[in-house]
Image (cartoon, rainbow, N blue to C red; front, top):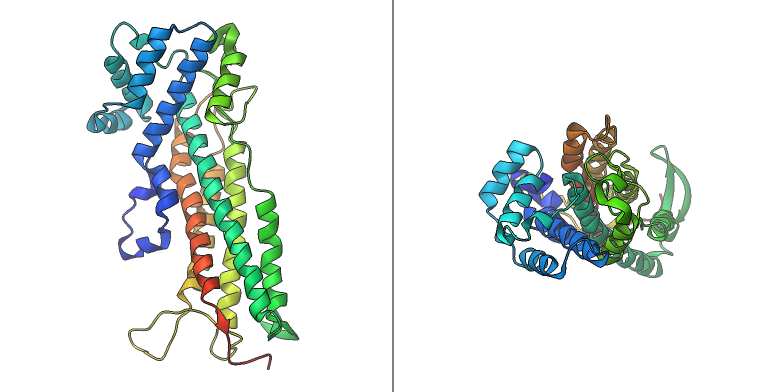
Length: 352
């Protein structure tokens, strides 16, 4: 499930530069999160007496120091359409015949993969929240420094009425603060077994097992499996889309304010190969580009929410492709916005 981090974008790859978020979608990060799920499952099953202490110790030790054959895992992914069957085979072999069968007991591949995704998405949102909080501080600083400077309000690309730089920046702050106040906080554990019937897969202790796992992994407890109900993922993607869209508006506004005839603000820019006198608003443009990129992938992700029957390999696979660009693109947009706002200077003109 390495997704967009493996795309070959050439020189344009800088548009998605976000090592902190991208690394959470690398294969090793997914493996670690899947093993965290397996370790939590075994611990919960031990707590209700379904796995003995020796089996638990063997499983925990194997999860802490997995000796995985990456080439075999890649081949298994191509063969099975999901990494878990080959990973389980390797882990059971490593644990040994005495306790290996207790590994992944009752679970299905989707339980492991979806829970691993939630573990990582929760980390991503925490990263984005930190960046958003820092950006809001930067914007308040900008208002204090330049907010009283004159500018022109514009509607439908036409001059409307005079107002101030601060008036415009506040139109950015309000939705960004709203998004900061409503950041996603529901990251549910997935536990449904082969066909989403938790009790059939995990027995009479299924609720206790799920509650213990959710607490261990610091995820939300879900009373039912959500194998084909992707709303929790959609809610995170929707928040990221809204955030990227607001940042795109910041980019569009800055590009217009910094435009040569307008000159209300000076934005850090890049050069031209043919016209050295130009200073192109590259950071502002990048925000608009990323907003549209996130929107396109979010739309694709919405189509992946439509599952047939009790599990869809098609929709699930499409989700793996479409979701990481939404999160990485949003993360890159926040980094870009921080750099852009930091570099804004007063322009050479007021409203004309």
